[in-house]
Image (cartoon, rainbow, N blue to C red; front, side):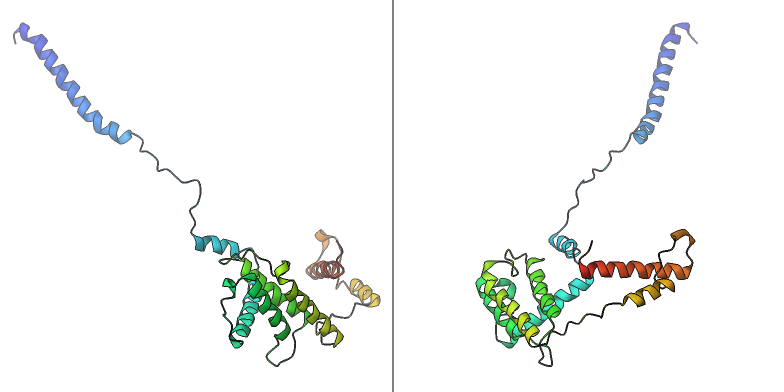
Length: 222
């Protein structure tokens, strides 16, 4: 080979090898490049139904059932009296007049009046229904002045029940001191050390806790 061609041969070989290396490395570099991460939203996107579901969760199941019962009873009365059952759309003044009449006329299926506690649950159920989702009424049937006449009649119904001796809400007789002492002696109620109690004593401690909570609730003692 001519010596004069060696530099050119060497330069061509260099360029060839360089191009091959670049072609080999370019796909690898493309694969190694980090992919951009998808942007994540910080806040959740909830529709109105999902928001209402969360708001409904503020009350317990038993309270929710009580609300359904009270509203169903009120709307049954409205229908029987040929009134619009869409009470949620009524202005406060008109609703107040209907509630006043309803409090005075509502009865059980057998025609007897409800107990005092049932009247309280009934009024509270209607209030929860109106102020909860999806209606969110701005008025308060328990306190607002538009409903003062209705609430006065409600109180009058409760007092009349008491005067007539028809308040069927009855309390259990108080526990005698001798019976209470016997329950502690027999470990029916127990305050033994937690780490040294048997299964039966654990049940006794559970009963003691329940008893103390019930006494505090009934006597309003903290």
